[in-house]
Amino acid sequence: MFRRRARADRAFREAQCAGQALLAMHSEWPAPDLSGPVTAAAPAAAAEPPMVHDFLPPDLRAPSRQDVAGSMMRWLPPLVIDGDVHACPTCGAYRDWIVFSMRDDSVWLRCTAGHEVQELRLDTAWYNRNSGPIDHFHPTLEEGLRHLGH
Image (cartoon, rainbow, N blue to C red):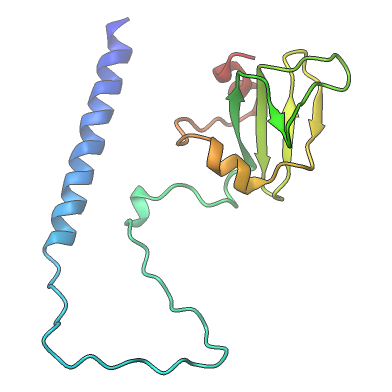
């Protein structure tokens, strides 16, 4: 019983140490030189957006979307979409959903009875606004559903 908690505590401490090391590395960067004259940059016509350096080193990054087929979250309260409570078209269930965000930017809903339906009124942006951080990766759909209690 305590072995799992000790493992979770150790993983949390290791993540904290990695975060502290990352912060320390970025605090050692030189401050920008603000003593020179300020010039307004001329707007470039149809310029490419600037390349942004990845903040995290490769070993701390989340897997890319190509590596993951999709993500899922549990939605316990009634799901209200555009002012209407969404119900399963097959069994009429209206709460305790598993919400899937797939790689093709579609959102699917699964009720407790196992009926799945694509919800066209929801998109990946809605999913990202309402989901928390990813806490587990599962090799199969069944393992993910078991983890979420379905």
